[in-house]
Amino acid sequence: MKSVINIRDLSLEEIDELIQTALDIIDDPAAYARSCLGRILATLFFEPSTRTRLSFESAMYGLGGNVISVAGADSSSAAKGESIADTAKTVSCYADIMAMRHPKEGAALVAANNASIPVINAGDGGHYHPTQTLTDLLTIWREKGRFTGLTVGLCGDLKFGRTVHSLITALSCYSGIRFYLISPEELKLPSYVKKDVLHSGGIPYVQTTSMEIALPELDILYMTRVQRERFFNEEDYLRLKDSYILTPERLKKAKPDMSIMHPLPRVNEISVAVDADPRACYFKQVLNGKYIRMALILKLLQEAGTL
Amino acid sequence: MNIDSIQNGIVIDHITPGKGMRLYDLLNLDKLDASVAIIKKVTSNKMGRKDIIKIDATIPVDLAVIGYVDPGATVNIIRDGQLISKQNIDMPSELVNVVKCKNPRCITSTEQELPHIFRLTDPVNKVYRCVYCETQGSR
Image (cartoon, rainbow over the protein chains, first blue to last red):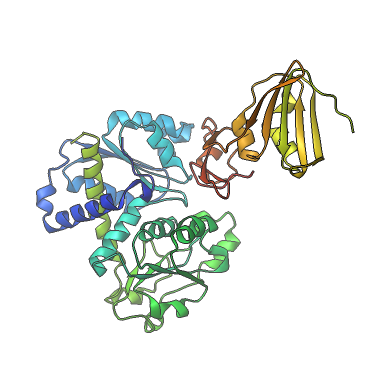
């Protein structure tokens, strides 16, 4: 049973195939509107989410399927102390595929090890969020038309930002990729990501605390939010949350065709005034998220023999 | 210093100096109802210094634990005062319930029944990572 817990669960060929399917869906959504008729997606979100949960649900409805959902640990048996393994076995009886978000790292892997249906990791704490990465890749493809030869700046919380870790892992598979890692000292990219992905792959990168140094070089600027929920200490959060704010003034230093991405939600790290800039593509990213999830649900159900 | 030879038991030899106690702990030798000698920093022709553990009982020893903590160690089985086998230890590819993940964000911190599994991800640098959260195991 194929599940997607980590972006590395998908080969480059499979990622290309998913992007192609998503592009086909964008071209002709009506052709896919009954693809999952009679199939059920269960969304289990033990941590708050707007975009990810709604995009999974919207994706399944877009394929003609149905959705059952649990939103919040308080409204499920998890509140009674049910284990993830038991939850996964139970949900397998009701649905054909499940998407799960959980605050603990590794939770989706535990679910996949115990479920008899495909499991999609919709975020496990600060760890992995593969469908956000697929969303980001589809967006980069639609904006740039390629994955090779790009200089990508990642800015903000690179320590706890799961989307950043997954995106670095995915893009590192392509040639000519360079990274600028822009963060305060306390939120630098974890050494294991640098070592296992960047160093082992010989990927060039610059680590800096200055957005100004990086901006003129970038083809893509990927902004992230400093996440309150990842801090044990409120003081640290308050001290770091305003480290980088992207404004129209700062953007004057950037290339005219640089793409500005953000996994959302934003707090204040991108000024609302930037939304009108043609380089801003974070709301296009949201829409792309729905299409790529449609492609992923289709693929996993087909591979499970459910379609 | 004199430590008597054992007649029937196990000698874990060529332990990197200082790792003897860690092995003693992880092999749960404190719970063993038999004599155990930990000999620390003895002179060794091959290693300069080494630790040795002598166990005066024939018990199953978890070779994965030894391979994880100190893959250079050897395990000698003694029967009737004679060395009957000498085994070099390889690093295990996976460890189950040997060390605990210390990451408070890991799913193992709340799901008590889950096995703590670490996998060898970098054989050159002897790095093991938790399969759930990828935190590095402490050796």
